[in-house]
Image (cartoon, rainbow over all chains, first blue to last red; front, side, top):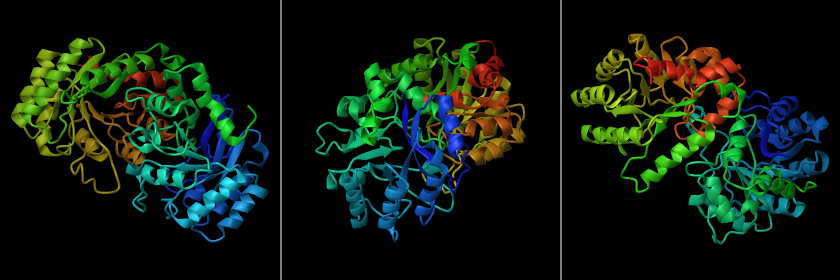
Length: 260
Length: 264
């Protein structure tokens, strides 16, 4: 069993994405042996009104709820986000949130963000935060969107200890409080592995040692990314089958409330 | 490599680096590189050692190349050497390339970002590479903003221009997945059949390998990691190409380049 917590449907404004329909993504998943995937709208990253992206995802994956798990992209600095959240949960059955604070022009410490995250915690929804949507060095001449600073995320984890977080598309955790032992941070977050190393610096190994095997989850970034690099990391990682299974799916299943 | 596409061919990482010896744990770093290569089925790594700061001085690049030569002995048959030079130290650079290639068994030349590769100061280096029948791996990347840290970084357009000037040169445009606009780079190299493109870098954007193969042809692509090991190997495993084309990229193309000077 493999659960990918980091997948997308829809378009990205600055690069053509292939396999970005539900059917296309499922074919990719089948090719790579991935059973289920958490999906959110790629279009919503650059839509001003991110709810339009959530509506597209809800329509696209109606017949694929057995394998695709929808997350809502909510912009708490945009009008009507409370209505959007209610609609995404109650009508679309979305199971978590995805936040883009830099793309959507707010900070994780802003009161509107704290309100949204606390609302998510109350509803039992995990909150995922991609550190980046794409490598900043290849950015378009139109935008300059920096990565979300890990320190800012650490502040949010502390401010909302009852919320549960997934941190995605990140690197360098072991050099921050997020990847250190006894950091004083609540253990309310998991780290997704798509950009982490399994050889050379072996950040995955260091995070396993520092945080324990219950804190890493598998993700690919499909269809922005190829899936094979993330699978290869698990293949070459020096860890037991049990630990690898925790990363492959068990930890994500627990976070998403799926039957184990 | 467990995949059938790589079972019948050698896997050569055309873009790797050894640690500078000012780094305390350089021996451990080099050992980890070989271990990673073992895990990923990489038979040979084409390595350079770079000075920690650029522009590299003559003394600096000579010292680095000496360490590369040592690693070629320590990891015999696994580490192949690129001779790193700064073309600005022209006489010293040409002497160093001759010494490394003719007497120390280096396989190629590594140019970094001291000059864009279409500047005249680079031409004598290219002419010597042609004479010695060795490739030049050119550090490259194209961003849509001014790169303050690397103001003279080359891009695919510069490599293409140099290739048009010296069509017989074996030029390798470095790390298409090294963080710049890879679509721009691939398109810039399209009409220069003498220039190769290395697939290394941390970026694993879906479709990059397929686009490069479609526009440049699999014969012009070289597998590389540039120390992003699972990214480098994973994206080529994932690419939707024929097994024949993948074998070329995994190592056959680089092997052909290395054999231009003499069988290894």
